[in-house]
Length: 75
Image (cartoon, rainbow, N blue to C red; front, side, top):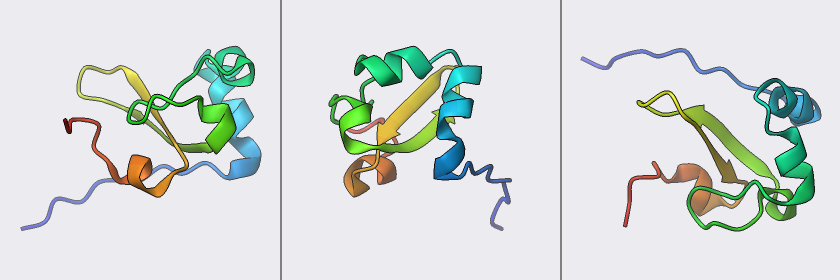
């Protein structure tokens, strides 16, 4: 049987508010916040994904398709 989970989405117009609430907005704007997959600055490629991992740490991915789809545990 498939387990159902709620998906919480944020519109692109509201991503700065989310990042501010998470304490990541200044890092995002300065280019210090990097994608957890390709390690490029998220500000350059757009914010694609923000999630909490099993250790309850915030992970971000840029808007590149391969980074958004990665589970962050590869390679």
